[in-house]
Length: 196
Image (cartoon, rainbow, N blue to C red; front, side, top):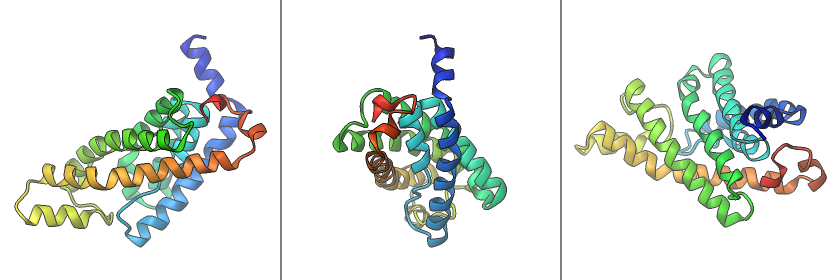
């Protein structure tokens, strides 16, 4: 199957129905976590869900749309993070294609891989747009590290590599539990059902 045929198959009717639901999951949970100022995000559960069931490009699109819609309608601070969401969906889909969403311990590995990519991409955005301090709960650690004499980039990267693995492993596991809670018949209707 060629790339364009695979892409067309991935964006099936089931995928197009799942994407808005996944966006709603991302925004609702992300907004709750943001309001509570927790040191995690949990705003990518839907993105990972789509990446697993419909492939990396559908996951990437879900991430971009989630942050764009969230940023334009509720919280403008969500908009600049769309590249992070894109990579989360892409890496989740690639991990699923590699069979890393079959058992819980493989899902943990997927979460760690997603975390590494998210930490790197988000650190650049954080430093470039916010000078290292954002509205998230994890910025307390960044501020502390900066106040103790560490540089902005070092502080942001250190904070990202502490909190991103916790967040992304939890996100991947939650998405996996959601998929496991669905009937096999329902999951089989998605283009990448074999990933689950």
